[in-house]
Picture 1 (cartoon, protein in one colour):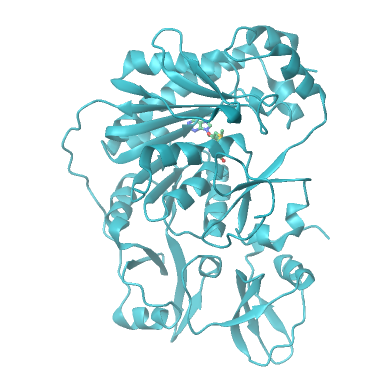
Picture 2 (cartoon, helix red, strand yellow; picture 1 turned 90 degrees about the vertical axis):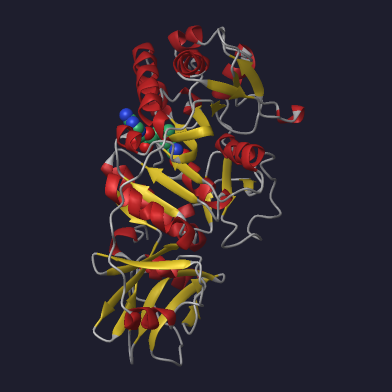
Length: 448
Ligand code: SAM
């Protein structure tokens, strides 16, 4: 049952049909959707019903145990609520094929929007930020599994980004909110809902927008979203943005058959897009786009310097990687990492201003005369060479992910990449009569 004070508070929001809205919340229908990782597999789920506004989104008929699917751990897909995938359509409308852009995902954990952005801006830069450290760790893990190598994960308060004036082509603010859009999926969201919290969230949303605003370029886009139905967190925030910054509200074309409700804010008629679970196949969601119309000011960004690997070290690494001149190597805490050359300078600038949790792909460490590959390399989409691979069946793949023993019939001894359905899971070392399982302990699965 939905709280009466909640229903009263949203009575007048645009597009709400109280009767069908309540009915859908009283039914036990659950919708599961996933977004595949185009850099790892495009065949996966291709016979399933598609999420119409996202090229790589699919509905599943029932919710499987994702924990028991090795492809889930391999970052072959991300379990994401379908309405949120509308961000793909927005990116497509705003940028089309111009994907070499710099995007800040301000409130990024656990990584749904960031992995979508990493796929869309595959040759761009995604700075994926989360203020809460423990959540930034989960974010970093999900980004590493996604493997696209074009992300920098930061753990900063939004205010820290005000130092990066006019830096990003788009800011995505998927703001912390009162969470009513998740009522159907999450009973605790219903229990925790209160009018006071709506007011608190709306003030926090304004603060976050103000904190990061300066880091957006002139003509860059602010993409604001919540999973709340409350006007205070949606259309009223749009009016607050127009009152405080020089912006233009951007209208996003939507097909009528999608049943997304286009709304306009009271005061400035700014456009917003509402997703109601009784109208679309997904959960409650709100999203809006503005273009910044303030002049850039000239800024000279300070940057740090990072240690470079020696020629010998690079030669050792190149035994593992197919030559790619677009890659720039660097060292951090003895680990060798790699980033797209085009955005390497951004790594240096961000390293100077922010707390970076991870950047690009960690390739591994040089120990003595050997290169010891990192797990991130195994799950990355970089092209590897001269590596022995070992395809596992599902049971052995799960044993590997549990970090338990398993047996394989391999002729060759030494380091090997274990794969499942052709997708990298991690490293092992095949010895005379046992296998060393190098799956990261902190990522292992615990169920039977
Ligand atoms: N974008 C994420 C995704 O798609 O997976 C979901 C983000 S969730 C709606 C909002 C995030 O904002 C949470 O991870 C939360 O920790 C973070 N957050 C909480 N308070 C914040 C604040 N004051 N400033 C910035 N982020 C905050």
